[in-house]
Image (cartoon, rainbow, N blue to C red; front, side, top):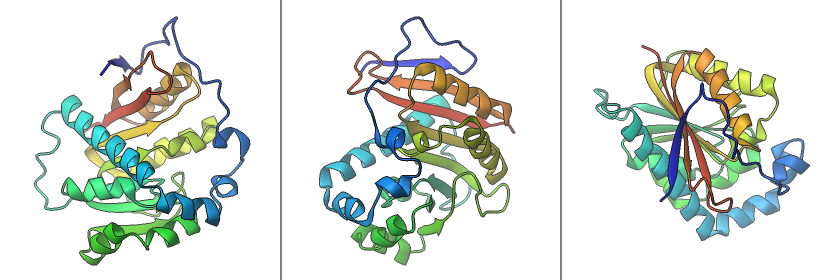
Length: 231
């Protein structure tokens, strides 16, 4: 698998890529306008989409371990991990399998409601290993220094305005413990946009970089922001 890592301080390369295809977040002002109850119900039935989300979440956790050796040597049993834009809970499935207690946050009540029909959600919630909260990633309803990990898969691209990314970064810094890791996979419009997001996160006290899988293949390209909070 082709991959490339870039520190967030670096400027975009001359071969910086840019997405030209129109996507839902380019058309709809709010995710709820796209994710209607009918579309969410179809997502619940889409086994292939679940596999993709599981694969991306597993990849994010693996690269965190590679980039920040020793992170998974946690003293606490089932430490808390935040799943931003949790949707139907696919990323939280992987977080629980990895030994975390997952807390999913989504701004769409229909997503959280429909996710309750999934067997894995029912099982993990029954073991008190998965909790769901209706909230925005830019205004998290949690105490400070609560989470040892924050992950987000295929969701943050809905936050495109600089003030939204700033609010997200500020909330991550507040909600994460010192030494906590962040793994965000998203579909930015360009490499420069991703680098700018990385710089915002860095100013909030995180250190890390950007990992791009398959950088030369637009259809297979996956971009991850990986960072660890100072302390």
